[in-house]
Length: 384
Image (cartoon, rainbow, N blue to C red; front, side, top):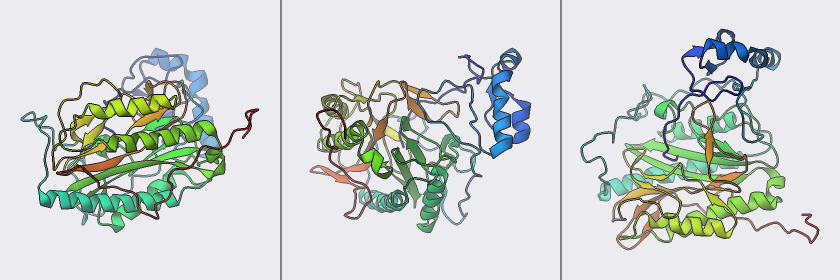
């Protein structure tokens, strides 16, 4: 799960760019429709003719778009209501943010930029949690098919975490409502699982993090949904480029490598495939804290400070787009999408710097679902 800047709640008024106040639509509240915020009474009244369609849709089907006046950049829409928050047994150790949503660890201003180097015990704990995280991701990925909802995938991830005596790290982290991030098509990262079904031709990124025996393990992959996605050249190009960008960056990991070097390699490879690199979100340190130093930018000529040293554990997780690198956040304050609505893909591993190189703690297994595919053949007239 990428580290990124906090976002402010946007007003749902038609053509309104203001930050929302605490004013919510009373009808939405009575129907259980959440996050229906406006900046002022005047803006709410001006938008009523459009906004009231949300109530009609809710009454007819039970499903609705909670942000009907938002200027979406692509065809994807949220499908609410979200399912109730899934519970984690008290017998499973919880991270410090589990109850109130506010992470406390790693927030001290004293030596705030210090990068931890784990001892042998800490390294072994990271190996264990990352192995479990890989198992959970593979279980969820095996369930991907046209017709399944992202909420059903969330349920699968949640159950698999509990079966491994682990807490799903995203759950209530800064108030994220679910146990996994599911990012479909133009969603860069932090997609919230909901009632939308996956369609043949979609791509979906599953970002899984487990908290086990005091340590976090984080990884993600992008998967093709059905055969249509695998037959589309642009879709395959962005997915396989993102996969290769991560692989190229990992080749550099060893003691002495500067953190800023990873972005140079990633952007050079992305540009060679006519893709761009998202800049807002970065890789991050991870150990007993979900997100901690160092920050790992994925774009070229960045100003990241520091170098790899044995015992450090961090993620590299490039987000690659077919179009522009700029992003927009939905009014749920989590879902980040490309500004032009074009598709994007991401891959992530948790890495351990060793004395001689790198250990990929979340490495794929021989039977892991997904994996690279070749570019589909395109004939001279452009047909597939």
